[in-house]
Image (cartoon, rainbow, N blue to C red; front, side):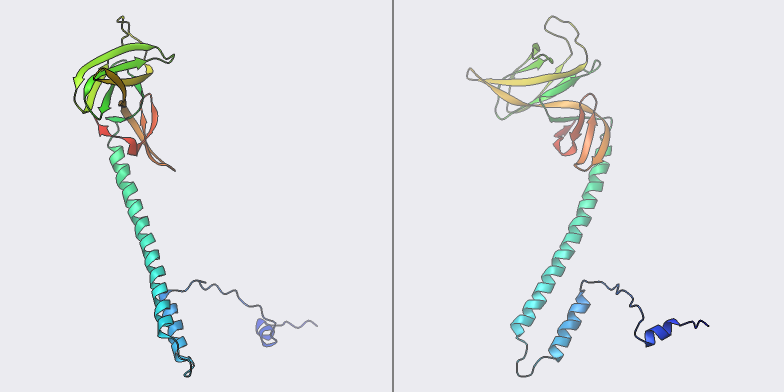
Length: 220
């Protein structure tokens, strides 16, 4: 005859299975204060707890709590900034932007546009270079002051022939006192879409591809 043994009998015999303790392993502020109070209540009257140690432990706990709160605040701020940037970037679709680049895209309808960025003025010229490194057009912008000078290339070479759409190199020179120096260039691109990836926001420009959102210098 088989006798069923209840779970309580196992427990009475000390054979019951212990349930896993699922309490949090980390201490919260209330747990810390409870432990500190218990420590004070059970201290040795002949060797009382040093007040400096007590205050030091409180200061450490406050510092940890403060850092955790600061981290949470930064996460919230980062999320808010990312959402704000996404909305701003989405509004750029269909608009033109200027970004640092030595390459521009020639559109058969609007040409290739950009900006020469100069620390000081002088005689400014822009050379347009094809894929083989040949200069296909030179644009003389005349004397310009410090700052930015806009230029537009209609897509024709020096002989007046219309060149195919595509990417072309742009390089600028500023001549001062008979000495020519290279200058920085910004290319203009049309924003087609916006993407949010692991490296942050990026803009997809027509004929160019992805450009980091934070590299945009101006909306045109």
